Length: 255
Image (cartoon, rainbow, N blue to C red; front, side):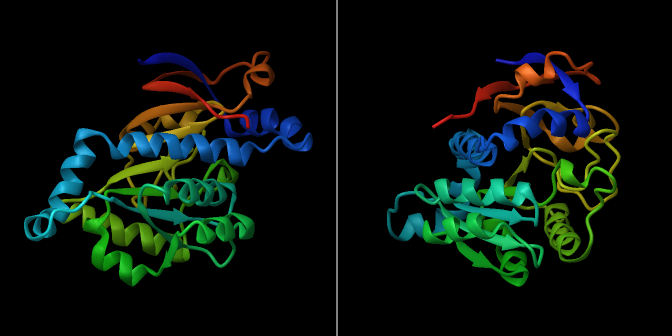
């Protein structure tokens, strides 16, 4: 069920997170578990099932198989990359999950957890050749930590551009799930250049970022799912930047 909620700037959200992080609250693990739950639900949507069935149809005709989807996770250097990797570890129970690291730096513990769970590291040439075979792509490259200039560069820009170009060529393509915000979108203003993957769904943590509903945000964010990670009390006394409609609100697990 949709709901109207306030929006906040990246700095307001970071300020609300800070006391919880200082107290040792595992916000990343909470966010990742909720993200994995949303992705599981997306894998069961009619749109994704149709895509998956089409990808495996030649195999199914030869030998009946259980549909096990393939998921690609795009991993950046910051907390969003950590969120995506921990979510990938959860998803490996129900899907074949590949991780494309787009930076020399990455969340070491999250990657080790993902690999131990069966997540496979891949390189861009493998992805570029087979992107249409994924049921979902999880965009975990950049989050609100890049608010000063979120434009993608280097390996990250190359990966997004290659996948974007495949999307534009048409055919059967995966749905895109953005982690917190679509990578390359400014979290406050909604400004973005062309190197952004337009999301089917954006799973945003703690509060809706103002940029998701301003500028190019509505064009790039798709449906918004808000994950409650416990920032409500800290944001109650903060003046919102605006208001947004979200597809639904989910509460992150606290265990």
